[in-house]
Image 1 (cartoon, rainbow, N blue to C red):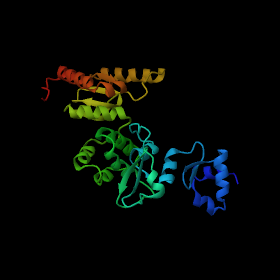
Image 2: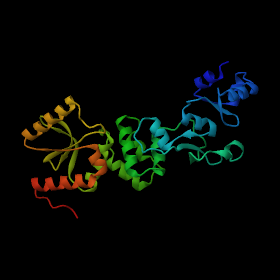
Image 3: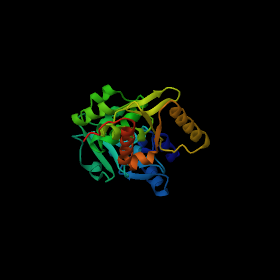
Image 4: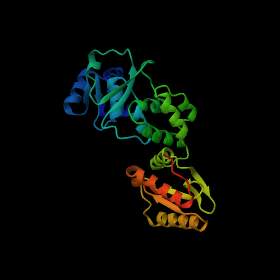
Length: 282
């Protein structure tokens, strides 16, 4: 039997008991390790070269991916984990034998329900409150709402996330969000008490990111700046259409929103005061 191919068919990381169930003797595993065909992660657990590190950690350390590890696996935007793999396990799991040598790159989330066979997107989002800030959690939540993998009812049932943060998430989350910079801009405008409507349908132009005070438009370009000819031209045509309808467009890049949100807020306030004499809140 080609042990490496067999292990790869089972996810890349396999316990000795599974090999034994298929009639593979211990001597064959020892020979495969010596030849480099398999690598021993810990006693009684083997992996192949290039195996998924999350799957390897789940099998080797008897946990289930959760928090930012599971959110990243689902394709949701989360901060870099710095090599950490977040797993969940029960409070009462044995800490002897093979479990004593859990590596430093595994971060445990203890569960009163014991080891879960599957962590739902909602639970992973809830658990992420332990490890990331509320804005990063909101960014992941907006993306999950857009993908329809969670609902606001799921958020209302969060119990790991504090009540205060949960209420904040419910107040600001929006399934219409198309990119993390849009979430960041929305948070900044909301915190500055700037009146706006999100994803507003502007006559003659179409949907715009923000309508500020009913007077002008703010657009936020996504992670990849609209620099190709077609996108660049389309953006300028939209800006002209908005201008001809009696308004104007302030356009910001993702870099602006991420690195200079205070400047964006200040400029939006300045232009709002130019268009309408509204005193800025203290």
